[in-house]
Image 1 (cartoon, rainbow, N blue to C red):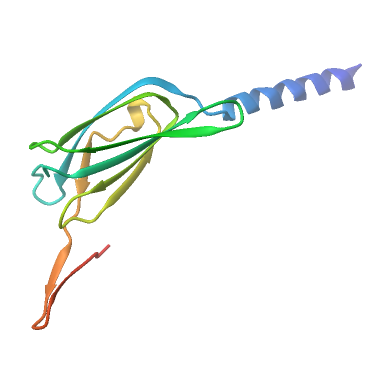
Image 2: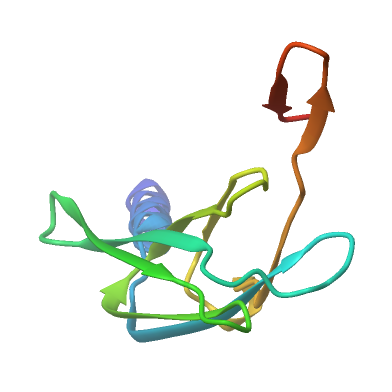
Amino acid sequence: MRFLGDCKVGLIFIVFFIFLSCAREAYNISYTGVIVDEETNCPLPLSGVQSFCFYQQNIDESATQQLITHTDSLGRFKLRFDKGYKISMAITAEDYVDKFLQFKPLTAHIPDTIYLKRKFVLQTSAATKLIDIP
C-alpha cells in the first residue's frame, strides 16, 4: 500500500512540474519604449523597431505576430499584441550598433529605455569605413 501512495505523490509532482514549465501567455500586451543614445541620453528619432511576439497557436504549435514601426521625433514607440509569451525586438538606427532584445511580457521584465551605442568611424586616406566595436 505504501508503494501505491508514493507513486501517486510522484505522479502528482511530475504533472505539477509539467504545468509549471508550460508557456504562460499574457493578453492585451501594450509596450511603450524610448530609444536613446548611450553616451548623451538624447532620443534617436526615426529608429527602426522590428518586433515579434510568440504565442501558443494550439497545444502543439507556437506562432508569431510581427510588427514593424519607427520611433517618433522624441525616440518613442509603442507596440500592441493580442497575446503572447515572449517578445523579440531588433532595433536599428543609422550610425548605431543594432540591438536585439528578448523578454517575457511581464512588467518586471520589460525594458522601457533602450540604449544604443554609436558606431566608430575610422578614416583613412583612401576611404571611410564604419565598424562595430563591442
